[in-house]
Each structure stands twice: as structure tokens, then as C-alpha cells.
Length: 277
Image 1 (cartoon, rainbow, N blue to C red):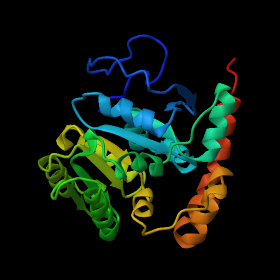
Image 2 (image 1 turned 90 degrees about the vertical axis):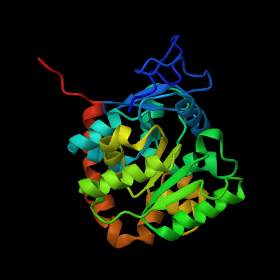
Image 3 (image 1 turned 90 degrees about the horizontal axis):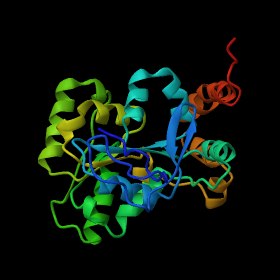
């Protein structure tokens, strides 16, 4: 898996490390936060730039939020998957605010919902063979029906609901990767949460073929109508996490009220690095 080198940078001739041609001019600029480079343009521009590239392996797009930043600081496998992703977007509003301050320019929030919106109404050519790895079958089935209504033929959409711990099950992972590749998948949508989605895709790598990969978590179930999403104003104000917590307090209490506090220290170190004598 290889990143689109300099997606959206103004320097001439950004290329895949595999040696492909330059990225289309509609791509986006980058900003560096917490030791990682993030793409800051629209979802459509990022998806188009990644999909236009040819690569020897999957081209994964990851969507960073505060929880991801905390996990990246502690989880080497997750960090490696992020580093090798084709594109990294800013999902959480606190990260968008940090990026705007750091770069001094407009920075767009790009969520898993935004990535899915690029393919659900009018599937582009790279989304002609879609595979959903979902936490729930009803969500995958609902999106398959929606894509067929949008023009994809029967058999173009497949899905799997993996068991708990699948990312560490070598035999299951190999079988699932073989199924995805045999399907001729051109777009793989991972809706089983982080960091397992990103780590599993990174581990399987070429066994998956050459699909574009969206790691979207619960956005898959939201797009299918199986879960609600926060009202627009809460999204705009960076309060979507409150809505999500109220919908699943037992599952999200530890993440939002214990683990996420580590982000404060990470942000402080990034903003005020310790001077070395």
C-alpha cells in the first residue's frame, strides 16, 4: 500500500512511490499535525486523487478523529497502517480547528459519511465492484440495495460480517481477503471500527487486490439508516460526540471520558515541543 505522494501540493510531479504519473490538479493540500500529514481539501478531491492512481495493492483512506490520535501514540501497528495509507483526512472537529490554526488557511472536515456520499448516489467507475465489511448485515444489505438502485448490476455488491477478533485470526483473515479479491473488488468499505479496520487492511495488503479502501466505522450503519447521526448544528460546533455518546453510553463512556483526555497531553506536546539542550 502506498501513499499518493504530495496529494494536492503545488510542487511539480507528485507521484506514487510505485512510479505512476502525477496526481490530478483537483487534489488537495496537506497539513502536518501530531507527526502525521493530513489532506485538507474536499472529500471529492481526495477520493478522485486516490482513485486515479494505480498501485500494487490497496489504496486506503483513513479518517482521523481524537480517538485515533490517542491510539496512534500508543499502537505501533495502527501507526504503521496510518503511515502507509494513501490518504489521511481530518474527521474530528478539534483536529480541523488545530489544522486551521497551524496552517493559517481553510481546512475541510472530511468524515466517513462524506466518503460514502461520493459513491452512493452515482457510483463512479472505481466503485463498480463494492465489498462491505460491516458490523451488521442489515446495514450492508441496505447499502447494497441502494447501490443497485443507483445502477450497479446484481452481484456487483458483496459483504461480510466478521466475528469478534477477526483481525487477529490468520485463517479467517486469509479467507476473507481471498473472497474480496475473488469478487473483483474495486472499492472495499470497512465499517467495523478503528483500529481493527486499518490494521487488517494493512496486514492483508496485496492479498486484497488493488481496491480503493474507505475506513468509515459507524458511518456505514448511519448511511444505511440503521443508526442516527447528530443534527447539523452539533456537527458544526464539534459536539457530535455528545450525540453519539447519548446513543451508546455504555460503549463510549471510556473512550470519551477517560481515554480521550490523553489527547490533551498529545496536543500540548505537539503545540509546545520540549526544547533540547
